Length: 97
Ligand code: SF4
Image (cartoon, rainbow, N blue to C red; front, side):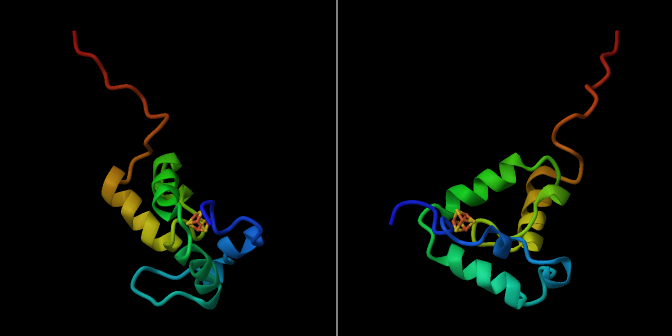
């Protein structure tokens, strides 16, 4: 198989309900585990993770399970990489004359 492993899967499993979204320090919930199991065998997992991180303007826009990682894990990665400020739509820096 060369394509995404989630093709044909129910997309909802990748978006566990809020009560099943776990913090980084906790073990994954059953809902998260179900999605992580699909990602585990995915040949495009690295690309998927990078695409998800690069396309989210803020960490809060990182949702669900993608790229073999939970929402909390990817949000932590996004904050570490881009900081806490929005990546797009920020006012340009003032130019001093
Ligand atoms: S890594 Fe991405 S493309 Fe692959 S199964 Fe998981 S969500 Fe789908």
